[in-house]
Image: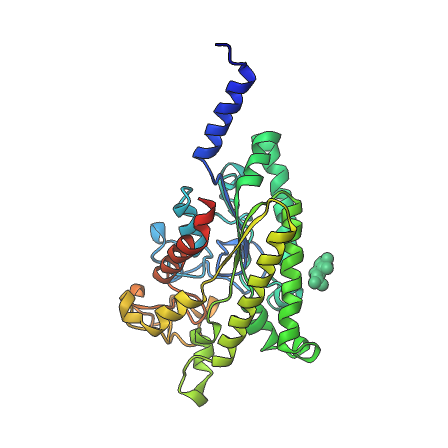
Amino acid sequence: MYIPWLLITQILMLCGNSEAKIPAIIVFGDSSVDAGNNNQIPTIARSNFEPYGRDFLGGQPTGRFSNGRIPTDFISQAVGLKPTVPAYLDPAYSISDFALGVSFASAGSGYDNATSDVLSVIPLWKELEYYKDYQRKLRAFLGEQKAHETVTEALYVMSLGTNDFLENYYTLRDRRSQFTVDQYQDFLIGIAGTFITNLYGLGARKISLGGLPPMGCLPLERATNFANGNECVESYNIVAMSFNDKLRGLVMKLNRELAGIKLVLSNPYYVLLHIIRKPAFYGFDMTAMGCCSTGMFEMGYTCNQYNPLTCTDANKFVFWDAFHPTEKTNKIISDHMVKTALFKFL
Ligand SMILES: *[C@@H]1O[C@H](CO)[C@@H](O)[C@H](O)[C@H]1NC(C)=O
């Protein structure tokens, strides 16, 4: 029987495609997923010094805000890619690395331009400009067709929003004088919707939108909650939950409107709250304070190698510094997200 050559090559291509379902992971967001972009820009939102990274591969600080790996590193590994996702601005990496995974995230950033302005970090719109630049490099490196395949089949991960509330809305006056919290949430949802639509326009199809954590339980917020015995700030948790509901609405709407998109909500809220409420279940001793220094206020430059109080075993702590989870917590949250949301892409 005669089988046309064209058909054979098509069959071979289909097989190739189904083997490597996710050719790359592409990340946008804040310190939850910044792998070191901020090292390359003038900002104080940094963590490329000890003791950050002390449990990272090779024990070196990278600019990740944790003692080890961050969620997107674990997710990358879980989908069959590299165990770490490099930062786009890191000169130690090039397009041959970024073709498999890249982070455009910037610690201190948010949906709102006014949030990234607070610490002069990379605003979300600029993360997307870097992504366009990346696409050009990818086409030059892989060729049109292969690059198109990577862009279409890649897993896109967005993780941000906490700073819009904690660093901006509840800390500075501007946004609070312009918006009620409900209106501010809608303003951010609008930005998220535009961003995802633009990303879709650039070819992305598989997108994970990250929900907010129980942000009232971050050690920094607890430390300032004297009135209530340093409990979680309930009002912030309620805002996080209602924002996540709005994100869920956005996900449903865009899945209806944008043909071929597969958008999922990856919600860290309940799993992190469970870890905080039942730490012993996961082998943690300490949940209210971070490992670094006093664990109540320090992060970035205030969490450094001169703090005598820093804990010795970060695996006993839910949080690494006053704002960011330990590697162990990041792993639990990532596994949960893969099981509950990202499995749809595998
Ligand atoms: C944020 O700033 C960029 C660049 O100036 C601008 O294009 C964009 O419209 C701004 N976003 C919002 C929501 O105002």
